[in-house]
Every structure is written in structure tokens, then in C-alpha cells.
Image 1 (cartoon, one colour):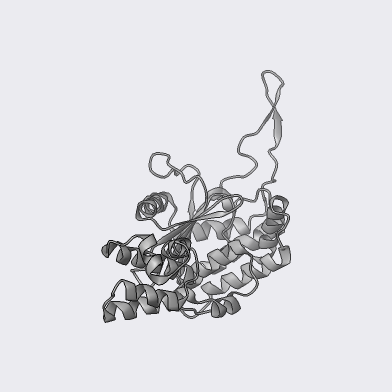
Image 2 (cartoon, rainbow, N blue to C red):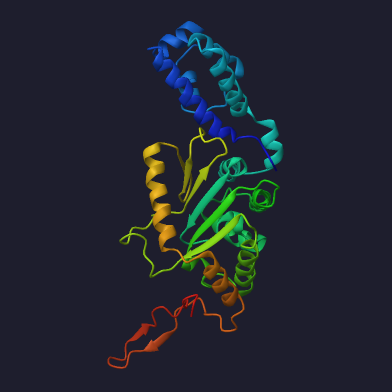
Length: 318
């Protein structure tokens, strides 16, 4: 689904540009809204924060107030048209819940994506069976989730990796993501083989972060996140942080710099892509799949039964 620049990112950029123009003219929100006859400042505030789809006529009025020269004006009109895009994106993205749509808009407009996941395979890399399993679990927390629609939406999002002009995608996965724990063996094998197959795409890189390969003095991300860069370098680099009930979209330079530093540290700790793929390929064909539960053994001294630590999920290299 080749699409134009992501509307959500263009809204953020347009808002920042308009806010800078207003401040350059030493105008307050109240003064601008007064000149345009807008009832309150909330409309302009939402435009500047990139929180609403702008009306092109409103943007033209703002450019008149700020007396923007013609060349800059034309560039901002292009950005405003992208920011106002709706129908084409809705048709291309299909039926999606709000959370998946937020990711889909970023993915479809991105030139590069780096994703870190500490516990599950990322949505763009999931098989339909694995996706259904994870979404079924998510429905326990969010019972309003439309399971079938979400499974279809995930498959539609994944087309971004198969299109003619795909983004370069890198997945940095904690080693336990690909361990056969808590997932039926047949689902797990299919998913690992799928990761190996996807890694053959020239624009897809998958790397495991070993449990004993701690990034930069033991610093770990507290949650999964995705980093996006766009074809137009002036569009704001963006990070999405995944939480239990919602997702945070970060565009502030200070925030992005911290996450980019974390990406560098994770990359330094991760196994090379070739080693990761070889390890996954071997693991997918292992006949002795570790069982999900910790086996229990007798403690020789006291007779107390204790878990055999680490035997629930052998190291992928084991």
C-alpha cells in the first residue's frame, strides 16, 4: 500500500511550523483567533499540537495572517494537504482499531523502522496463528477488542514489508521472545520459521539481544518501543512506546535522542543478524523442545523441592 507521507506526522510538522510562524510575528493564540473570528483558542491550539486534521482553508487563513512568502507558503500547503489526508488512507488501511491504525500510519509512511520487543514477536513479523494467540490474550485485558478485525488488520499492516518500496525494518528482540515458553510448540515452530524466512528479505534485519549480553552497564528499556524515520528529513523522527492500555507517541527531540541512544546500546549488545538467523533456524528444528513449566527436582541436602532454574527455556544456542 504505497502511500504519501504519514498524515499524523505531517500534522505534527505543520503544527510546529505554524507555531513558529505565530511566535515569529509575536502573536498570541488569542490575537490570531481574534483576527480570524474563531470562537476560541482551542482550535488553533489543537492545530499547532498536531492533534486534529487541519482544514486547508484554515491553514491558508493562518498563512495570510503570518504574511508567509510565496515559496514557503507553497511548501506549507503541500504539508497541509498531506496532514488533511483521510479517505485514501482509510481505504488503504482498511478496518483497524485505533491502536493498530496509529502504528499502520507510521509504518506505511516510514523510510526506516527499528523495533525493540522484550516479550513478544512484533506485530509486523507475526504469523496469523501467533497473532491470534497474542490478541486473544490481549482481549482478556481489553474485552472490547474485535479479535477477527484485529487479526485482519495485523495482516494488512504486514503488507508494508512486501510492497515495492518498503521501509528498512530492524527488529531487536530479547532472547526470550523466541524461546518456546507459554506458546504451543506447533505455533512456536511456525513463528520461528517465519522469522527465518522474513530475514531473507533484503530490507528486514532480525537480531537477538542475549540475556547475558546486557546493553550499556545493565540499562534496559522498560517497555517495547518502535522508532520511525521518514523520507522527508524535515518530518519529525518518532518513537511509539507500548503500554498495557495505550501507546505514547513521542516527537520531542530530547525524547527521541534518548531512545536513539538506547537503540545504539541494544544494537551493540545484540547478536549479528547472520548468527541470529542461524540460531533461529537450528532452534526451529530441534526435536527436544523445552517444556514451558520449570521442572522440579529434590534438593539433596534438605529434601525441599525447588525449581530447576533456567530449565524452562534453554538458551537458544543450547
